[in-house]
Length: 358
Image 1 (cartoon, rainbow, N blue to C red):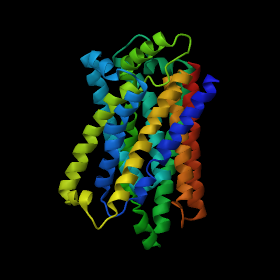
Image 2: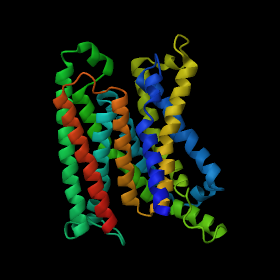
Image 3: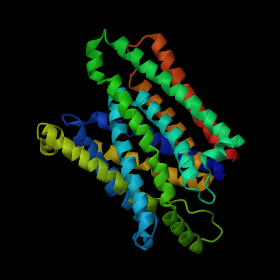
Image 4: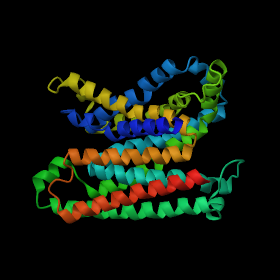
């Protein structure tokens, strides 16, 4: 039953992540940077400490008692992840929920599996697998094969994006409504895919805090297994790093674009804009709330991360169909993007299997 609930929690987290951008589409009259940072305040500043407070008594004491080097490294990965999260929003804006999420999360799963192993080739650590270990083992070769399959899928999705741009060029009105920009979209999606993997590194860096929360809970709940909410204390530090990046960037855009007035612009539906932005931000955080629950049940961080990515891609593409993001394209274009997404999902399953058998 533990594995069943682990998969279920990952599905709920994937649904939250694949759906969080939808409320933003209901915001009217605000610039992107305005609604993004209002949602972000809920995602990274308000909801994470509230979730930790409700699930981990004395979570602040755990953070204060943690070695400064661990706090700093966890925060640093949060800052890098914040850049990935920032460009994720831009990637979805310019490519759509379906194509943007597929490319970003495919890259995220690739680099989440590959970068740590390369790091440990240069900085060996007990219990950590290096890239050399991967090349010389059957599980590692499986992971590398999955990475190649993912790259093929991303190339096919990129081709589909170019085909979509060509298809819609004859329908300029539809193209303008969707804000579809293939060049900028692919660039920010690649940046996002690489840096979004830093969330997995941040969770690993902050594992001492989660372990402390787990030990405290198990001491008062003997025989009840692993603590379901242990990662919530780590999220507080990681997401403060994400907030730092996004707050600076969005305020800079507010200044550049003179959009500070959005927050008090009475000609826009202010209450609805704040509510939908808050809903998007809260929904976004729920992905990692349930991710932590799923990981505590499955017990394999790498495989949990891959499973999480797979569910997000599936949900994002369902939303892409619901929102008619591929409306107006030729049948060949539609088949191409479905093929590319299929390759990405297959690659994630291959990588997940490789991590599971090591």
